[in-house]
Amino acid sequence: MTKIFISYRRNDVGGYAGRLCDRLNAHLGEDSIFMDVEDIHPGQDFVRAIDDTVAKCDYLLVLIGPRWLETLAQRSSSNEDFVHHEIVTGLTRNIQVIPVLVAGAKMPGIQQLPADLAELSRRQAIEIRDDRFDDDVVRLIRLLEIASPKNSLQPASRSRLRVFAVLAVFISILIAGIIFLASQRSPVPEINGTWLADMQKSGRQPYRISLTFVHEGRVIRGIVDYPTGNGVIQEGAVEGESLTFSTLHTPQFESEPAVIHFTGKIKEDGIYLTSTDDAGIATGIARKKHSE
Image (cartoon, rainbow, N blue to C red):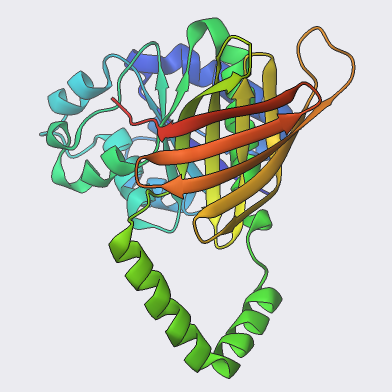
């Protein structure tokens, strides 16, 4: 079972935290969500209480609102800033820390954070907007399910891969050398994260899509947001600088699901995409979305 810890400040995003907790409880079950460590009792060791709670979790969601940085600075001299310690604990453990931006907040830059929180600025953030709260929460839930440890490579599979690696050691070294030389000639961007692409079909108006990728080995998972809805990536694969995947979703105002097939070429300036569906072929260049 996936377990999630919600880190938040009541004076900043208390209302958002409660709504998000309700949605996650409804989808994942109440035993999966932890929050309100700020209710630590007087005399209780808050460091141990936080460590024990965060250690049970697979994800730490850091809710960041408009007053988050201000409150962090105000409590910088305090040894009892629970939220600060929650994030540090998550960053130093084998836990996926995901910044969640609410109420129009922007992702803090590394210069705005203390040294022990600097790594937070390098974590890909997800935004939950007021006017699309439910849609954005569904998108967050899907990402949590996609990247869940249960979807990771199982120990038996890893063992088989290690055996093959030992048997093919010389071939592996040769391939690694070829890949290194190729990367020196044509560096390609990291795939993980959110990409934006303006797709164009012949004789039609362009439309924008958002692609969120989770890349593990040769497998790629994620979500594609279309103007008509969003679809989960299926059969995603990466081979060198090439990628392929499909999505299945039911467009808004339609009753039948639509299957869209993608091929892509990963280059230094973006991912060159071609999509194919019943309505024809579209092309576009996806460029990575960076947190502001």
